[in-house]
Length: 231
Image: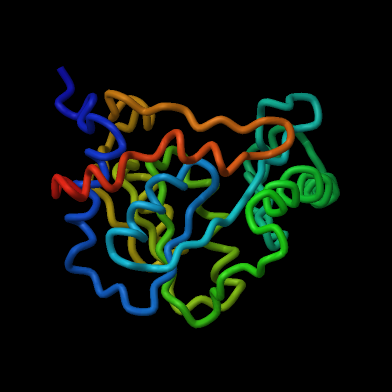
């Protein structure tokens, strides 16, 4: 039996392990960034634990013309685009299509989520700061790459990633773009994020975007946890 299967009981358990990985890191001038909505719970907990500012950043998939389930690229909140060149070549999709659709996806998906989240408030300052991107598990690294690109283009001082689990291959891939990757598990043979958790409730998003009030339903009871000194 694989000893890594169900390694984490739940998000709280994964956070306890992740905190240990981050305890010795210099977090001065650090902005914790959540990849929404998946990384919101983890990022919120890391920011609270280390008394850091947190911000959300969005990205959304650009689907293939004839297969809406297949993402050929991703667009970020500042219109940064990361493209899967192999899929583009395989499907014979022109690059112009990607950038045309990037604008559509940005306006229809990302702007709605930004409106739901920030209302009329400005995004936290990224320029000159150390960025720590937090997620609960990274499978392909595609989304995180977009967020890294967004932060680098916005002038961050450094960009690092903190995550309970990701594959060794993805870790090495991300290190081409970011400064550090802090993880609890980095197996050579990665299955899926859910595989390493016993319980990992899905955070849902509807057609109108993600409702950030819904986050409260997924958050651990921080007061109870802190009173028990468990995280």
